[in-house]
Image (cartoon, rainbow, N blue to C red; front, side, top):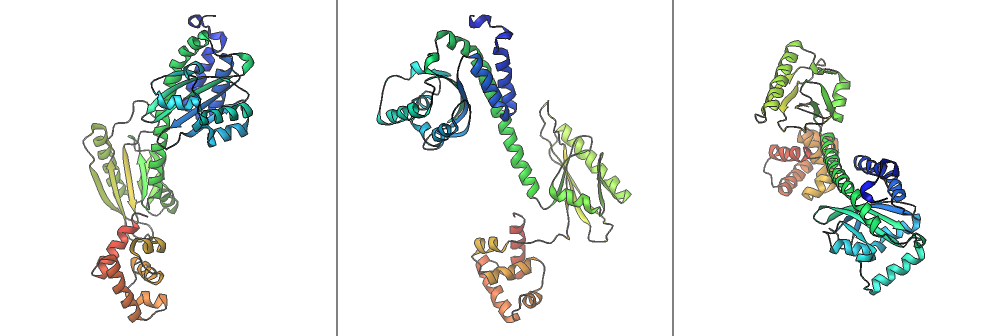
Length: 382
């Protein structure tokens, strides 16, 4: 059947749909490869990502079906760099579809080494590749493989695959965008989770769409701050009214893209401890038209009672402190007077003063208050 008259019943449409499914969910690539393998009369196939940023070709992703696992490991582990097809792909980034007839007959020592390995380890012989360049030095695609008895890919096969390749190219572009957004989301979430302040992201209606670990802990303490289905609320009614007014103001600024105004307030605690410091800040970047995650405001709550726990190893690395000096620095950063720190560490006050002098020298500070301010700045980056 000519490629132009392909019908929905011959498997082409199912294979194309599977490509788009795999673009949105990487674990579905084996299913897409199986459909592609069947509809193209192939015996095996692979989805791969080729990164030229390293000295030798690197496959950060390689998914295959109907290949021996040991052969795949050997290929990705080193033989790929000797593969004539891979070399051609790297040398001709503008060619979207590549097949055996385009590779030429040149043979060097490395090519013969690869072909000998291929003859011993892989049952297929003929290959048809469709790929897409995603960025400088980065490309991805699929490779179809046929056994010797199935014969090489002929003109009709290339024409048929050419129509499918249009969808493959679009699917790979979608996959790259989804993967990039997922990576950015993961990085952003990691940074939010590492914050020692409680962070709540609110949508335009004021509902919570994200809480970091510190916010979860704050919610569990129920000490002046409550979190419900309709947002963040405060125990004291007058303070809650002030918070909701700040949230509404921030939402309006976010929707009108007026910059990033912020409001700040103090929040009382049922426990009687020092009040929380609360910032309400508008997020003014307009989200995509179609998204399930639409934060408009973030509420940051800092607890002045939180004890800072500096890493002794970090202090030693950053300022070349001795273990004894780092122990004293930790005590001072925790708010202890020098005499109290000396007693806790089991040293004399004179020894503590001598170590403090060494700390001034190593941190380029001139007073205990300046030293503590520097240590607290370092702690904020932990």
